Length: 82
Image (tube, rainbow, N blue to C red; front, side, top):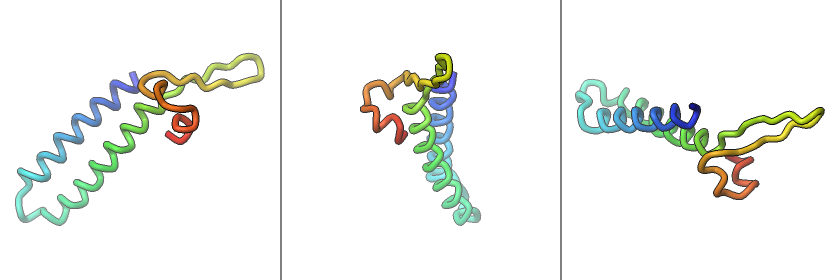
């Protein structure tokens, strides 16, 4: 469910960016810049969340991170960074 929440967040933030760019009134342009930056950063962080989703599996005294989703196509170092 975490990847689906991330995808919904990316879609809604994209709609917000469209509304900011094309439908915001001139009287709130200064706030629109703040909202635009916030929405862009949120899309980047949601993309990192989707690709870095991990499942913790505990075997006795050890904890193993099992990655799933699109991140399985990346290298191990890229998954840890994400």
